[in-house]
Image (tube, rainbow, N blue to C red; front, side):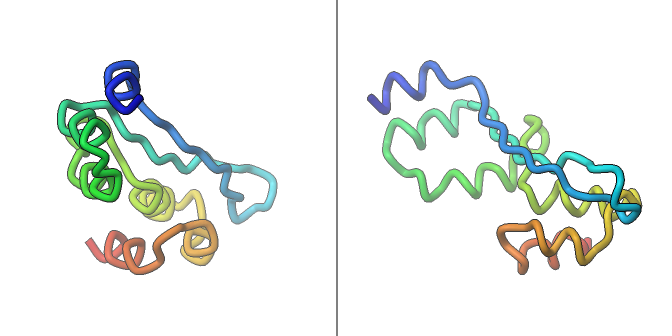
Length: 100
């Protein structure tokens, strides 16, 4: 089953709509994992716990974590910092990404 999934998978995208400061508009925050050779290999081997590290280092391949996406929205002035923290999965990672 893992073999089939690793061969069939192209990408995984998770999205949440985050409210803007005006409380009228919403902006999509995304988490994107592309099925690179490394990701496919981790899936085949059952090393799911290592997929997160691939998301973090895979920016060149078009990957991004939810926290990276939320940080970009904060930097662009589309959402408030507090809103980003309310919608993130890993507050410490978001804090780190916002400091870069």
